Image 1 (cartoon, rainbow over the protein chains, first blue to last red):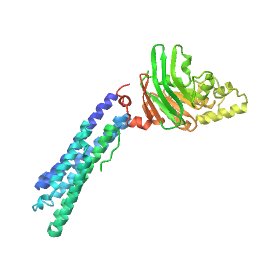
Image 2: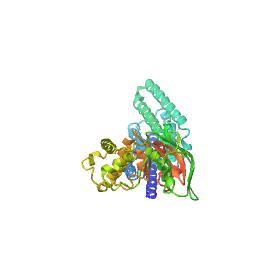
Image 3: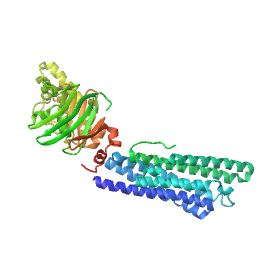
Image 4: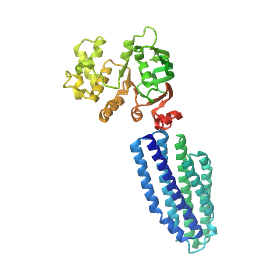
Length: 216
Length: 253
């Protein structure tokens, strides 16, 4: 019975990685669509929301079944606890991708202001953090998340910088208000995605060591 | 373990003939707590349990070294009265084993052996013990009926009442629910939770979920050694030893 349970647990973990990669690709494509003002790509991101939602429901259900039928303990319990958090974080990341994609159609008629400030760079860093968090979960490599606190500080600083720069543009020229407000919101969404990557990292650490850490 | 210990073993070793069944076991059993001993078959958990009230003395070719103390007194010290020790440390076995006597006689038997003759006093002890064992309401109108007519779960609670009647300090339970159905098991588990207010309970169980549900502390044994002992929450959430981890996640055993 234990063997069957561990096989199922591996399957759930594999499926969770698939879902996490879908959430990640929704965010990646949304940021690319925003940079390139590609409405078609943005529409394809929005179209994935049902798919990721279905995966969320199915995977959560599978986790609850594993708990109900096997009463997992120790690392098995921690894997399921981490997986449930991972599912939620992946869903949120995907949903932020969808929200950013929805912005694309509103700001694609005019050229970007100041090359969208630091948003492309910030997007790269956030995607890197999500990639490392997923890989750490998949391969139990907690070394990949060791510097997340410092990386999150960088993301926070970039969001603040985009906020200030956006305000400056808006004060100089009120015609930029719509676009700059969207930029500030996108920076905020990216910062939240980095926070979700940190949450995943905290849970991966717990999954592997049994110790709780907090990444600020 | 930070709680006050009532029972302790220090470098305890036991041999059955050549078989080294307990190897340097040192542990402290906290007072008024439930301690569970878990581990695969043959790991020595029942042997350890039986050391606490010197039941192994009854087996030939058993050699014991090391120390066991109850309230800081060595239970192997010369002059220790084993009957008194077993009064202080009662035991409940895997299979309910009531005497082929009435329910009343089963519970009153121990106090009688220890010299209580007064019928009124014995009635009081029988009622109190049966109430403590959560059996009184089910049997109060048929105390003179044979104990063998009770269900398995009731028989096991009767055995617990019989143990309580001599006012022990510690109750040893060796797989007390393994012969019972889930409802009777739940009643015994609820009872264990109540008993720890007045007694210290040590339970041996194969059922890890049961150990996790009922105990405050858990000791994991493997091949005669105590591998890890600590708070139940810690053992089942993040054990320190890999062997413990592998056992409780079903990778062996």
